[in-house]
Image 1 (cartoon, rainbow, N blue to C red):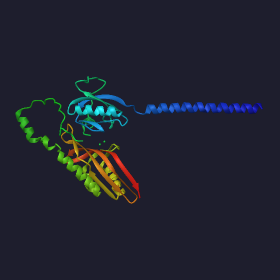
Image 2 (cartoon, one colour):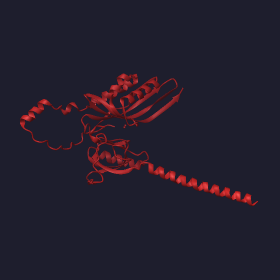
Image 3 (cartoon, rainbow, N blue to C red):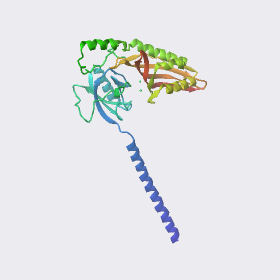
Image 4 (tube, rainbow, N blue to C red):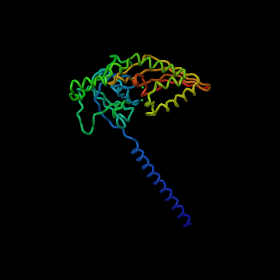
Length: 313
């Protein structure tokens, strides 16, 4: 009897020890998970507001998104404030996981006029640079009521004085190309979008590829090369027997502070079908175009499905 009772006691103690260890490991796992997940930090930036819609607020080279969990009343208030401050300086408060060059989906927290809350320079918070142009190289989607609006240009330091003879010689040797030749017009952007949508319907991969730059920030997959895009589009064209895509409304062009870069925002109605299933709906698209060697190229492609209906045969 003694041996049985001792054995039973040992079993109870052993089970209790297992429960304690399980609790410890669970606590440690949660702690490690919390430490590994990047925390969203709140930042401020002073910029010019150039556009606002139900999804985001736009500034030169930057897009700040509304949190999908934000209260409706707060979102409406922010949209009204942004609309009132269009083409004016404003201080935007946003949350992001890292720098703007790393986080492609910063969330909007607040907006106030710049004169109400000026940003003081701080050594801990360096001046923020547009993610598209961080590191000196150009870099994820309504109408702009004011038309084309470029951001104010920053004054550059004066060049050292040179003799008149030297200046004339340099101008003849290296003539500057007029800025207007690099500026992308609204008609060019609209024609670019329409033509690429038509080629996608025809599934003409060889004709589609020249529309993409050598490096593209491609949907949610980061920066990829043309070979990656060729494989991805090839699979897409092969998977669907019929592809239909048309503009649902106008193409809105958002002007940035670089004349050779523009953002196109538009909605498309799509329909795809093969022998097993079909899908139709609407997408919101944000494309960033740059003039490269005289040709428009896609350097950033983002898309959000806003409606979709699928059926199987």
